[in-house]
Length: 527
Image (cartoon, rainbow, N blue to C red; front, side, top):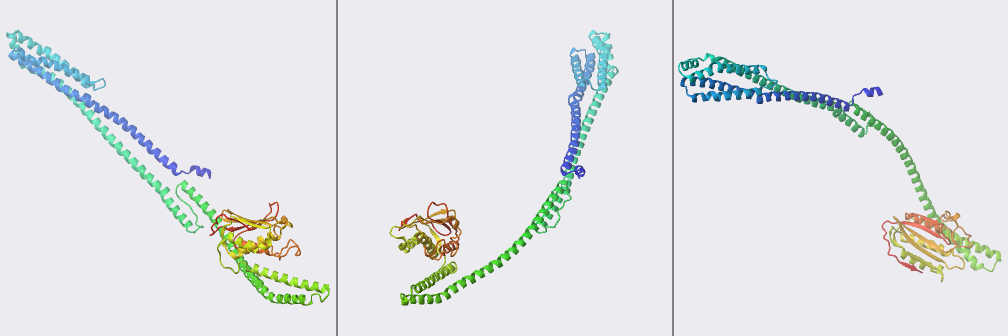
């Protein structure tokens, strides 16, 4: 597998190879173009700086020689020195033209031009030595020699070698120029071919790159996107693959691996969802059954409480009649039995009334309203004033306004404050403090006293219905008060617990949700 992976040409390697090949070819073409351009510059330099000046100098040289020949003939005819002026200036022009041609020839020029120039110089020198100078000397001498000078001046054949050598020089200069022009044109044509070739290579490389991108990237990506959309639409069994570049093949494999993982996890989620739905159905059935059971129990408790009231009232009434009518007429044991019967009937009535009140919590509701706990504590303190005594105190401060049923909240504080007053220490005036504090989205309310307290081992039992921690002859009551308190708190969405971290007395905390209630202004009250 590693060997196969090593032999696969990735898209990056293919693009790099294509760019490298194109770069090498274009570099070669660039080097060739540079060389050809250099040669072209050389040819142009020859045209501008050599053959051009040589051609002009050759024309000047021909003109200077012709002027010399014409001036010599004119002087032979007229004998005037002024006629020799063109001859003298022609010689100077000749020397200047020869020097220009000599400078333009250069060390690497055509040797034929150099030889032709030398031939012109020799021919001109021979003509001057054989014809021009003798004619001038003879004409100046006069006499028969002057006639001879005129005769020699009339013969033009002696000047023909000069004309021939000049013509050959101009022919060689023209040939050199034509070769330079032809070479420059050839260089320009070659440069044009190289430019066209480079442009063609760039176009071919671009087309090949587009083909590679289309074949190895664009089409495979579109195909991969189509497959992914099918999976996203819910076809999780659709296998994802790609036939593009090795990178896309690897990407498709990774995406397919992710699809398999998601599909596996989705199957597990579906299975878990099915189990959860089954459990929810079971719980719903059990909840419905529990609701029916609770409703039946509440109905039973309510009906039983009402149905038991009448026979209990009769038993209590007749027992009280027996106690009033026959008290003292029977023996002491009979009076004691009658007293036991009356007490039992009264306690049974109290138990039934408490049970009825417990069953009504949350079943018969008047709806939640804003309840000012300060006003509730004022009424509760007034109601429990006989239990408070002359030295006892019920204190509260910073109590808020909460949302709830005012009657149930009044019952809650009656039970809590009533228990605090009931379980006071002998000889110690009872003191009950009620406070509240806000904790995030709920109110934490504390009811604390200086009474006999509750042992930690009974912390979970005090809120259980009919659980008593003391004998009936020590403290009155049915043991249902704190159970009613707990049910009221839970009905309002709160929690209740016994605070064990107190040195003396009892401290009970409970919470009420901070919903639509508005915190009351801080106020203090003592009764």
